[in-house]
Length: 461
Image 1: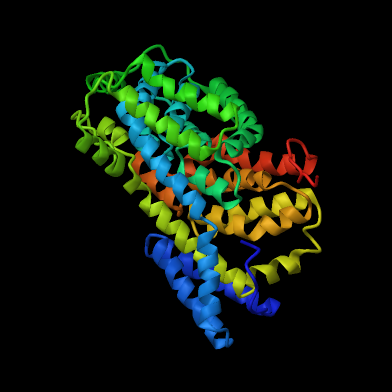
Image 2: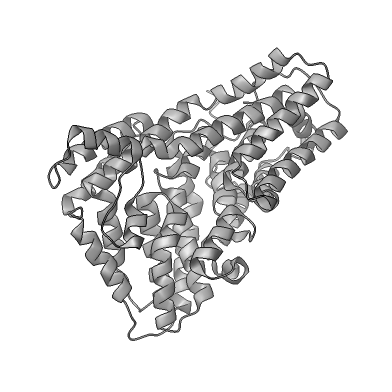
């Protein structure tokens, strides 16, 4: 996006004031009025257009800035549609239900916090949604924790850590797709590169959860057992339902493009579904567009499995278009270029650039409370700085997730923080010290930035 032609150059004071207005307008709309981010972003676009017209910038130039900004996300929008398609296909093929069932099977009262962390991580990766995982499986673990008198704060911390690990590393996650899209990095290359910081964070968190787990001999696991029974009643749990995951891994290792991988996997999953459930053409197309609807009668399981479809991606797609259009305007009006230029003397080393990007992502989460915007705005703002110090784009996409995606649940007034407090019954500040993975991720990305380990430089050949 930084290639968008600048049509006006504001003073540094103007740029700072406009940046504050943008953050204030968006954060005020989201935090104070609980608005979906679309409306505050649209109002911000109106503000930027008004500013441009006052500065005698032709509306056509402003329109071009918005259009060029939105164009930069077109290729990713196709990926989002395929992800919605894949989720539906994985539902009817039994891939996601089977993974969730296996996650429930490993639940035990021994090493309870570690088991909660691992299980929510598995389910989070399977469905690509941290909030859905927390609202279903997480609530079950909170119930078990109460039964064995385990700490609800630590349990909630383990649930949040596992769910956001799964969300971050899942190819079905919208935040993962947004981060890779922003920097034009292949989705699976992005996930592979994140492993350098994510796996150490996972291992450290797992060890700590295992050490601090209570010594319990029995617990009321009836709720989890009922979940397993409900899953079996769907007739979607089968060994061969895991084959799409094997195919996904093979394609990722072969470095086949995300578009082809997702398209092939969706078709393969649909074919597998006919081994255990015949779906008419009309019903199949409805599921692929509107998503799979679970009707087991178990509210938690139905909430977990009712998802997917191209239509489910419209919220994210519309947000991306608006946010990129706003970003295009900030570049066309010279706001971001002027701010970055003023920081140029400071951001001249790899470590400082990575730390600045990470702190910006954290800051946007704190001031605006929206993880999507922490990814989008930080990604737009720091592409130039990363290229200046010779860093490949996948380094920035990793930072966006390490300091953007997983930090949002740690902010009490953020979208995720408010949601998790309501569904888990544990306040954000209570589980904050125990969400080890979420706390470690931004620290590890900054540490690796200063050491230079696991970083990829731009190939100049």
